[in-house]
Length: 153
Image 1: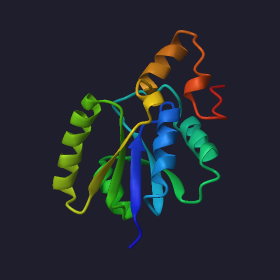
Image 2: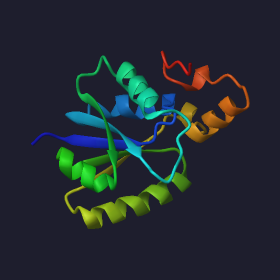
Image 3: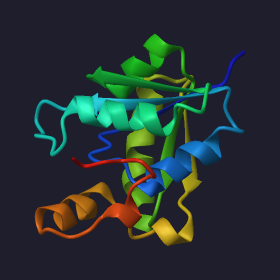
Image 4: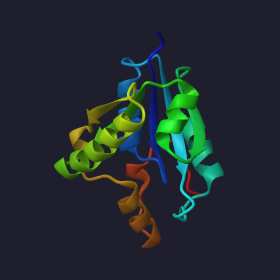
């Protein structure tokens, strides 16, 4: 059976931390689906097309990475994609507590689904898309926090 993991997120924008988690997961899974969740209750800073283009460019060298979008429940997307794993990155104990609750609810809704946590690399422990957006809004330089080739236009 093929081991397929879904790495869901808004990737608004994708950071070096996201990229690190995805690349480090590649030896573990046969395929990693990077899934941009579309949340109608949230207004993204960057367009869906920008985020898709960045992800496709960053992982163009990785045939086992698929880029996709979804709406609705992550567990429903996992069922549709025949994925038995959700991949999540952890920076802090607070991340763990938040993700543990979601993982347990997902397990109740889809018993075959396992949530797999990877610890972030230490240099990315403080990095988040929210912080990057704040730096951008205030005219700061975020190049060091974004994967190579991401152009904010």
